[in-house]
Length: 156
Image (cartoon, rainbow, N blue to C red):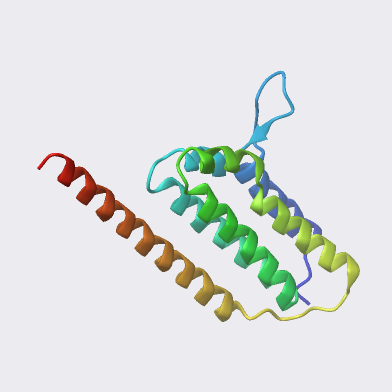
């Protein structure tokens, strides 16, 4: 019923390409996309990228995968977000770890292995993404306050 059609696959592939591999560094095989560029913007870039990746994840999950595959897909997005948010290390990580590409590959692999449509628990996915986002933002605010407090003590 909700299997990925050829048109869906083309659209998802284009969106994933924009996020992951749209730009090639001349003279190399290194490719990156909007995800890596957004990650360079301190504080908000990774969160914006997380939102876009989350939207792509939901589109892919709605095409029909089982819960273990959906969980792996969510894990890819969370790994990309959490590690990608670490200054410098995260920026380098974003150039190599392609969460959206991995998720599209998981979707296609699942659908090639089975012709059965499994309705995913989209509410659970949204809840997990929201919890992860709130937890990460809370952690970010805590670290910023700790840093500001430490800097304030240096000058007092």
